[in-house]
Image (cartoon, rainbow, N blue to C red; front, side, top):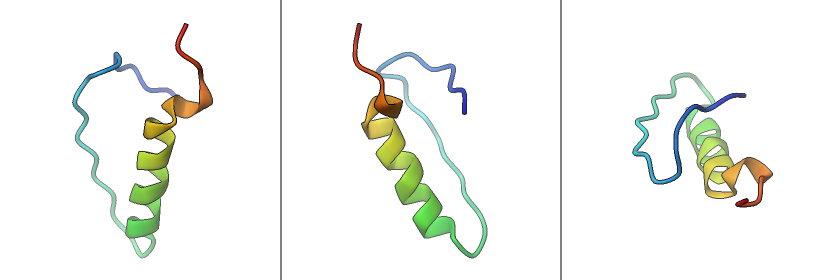
Length: 40
């Protein structure tokens, strides 16, 4: 997954489907964890 957004950018996410709650939670976790990348 690629995300072209600088740190601090505001994102609007939209999910749809039977797993939408779980998908949103997983996406938010990835963003909060900075996609597993350390600040350089």
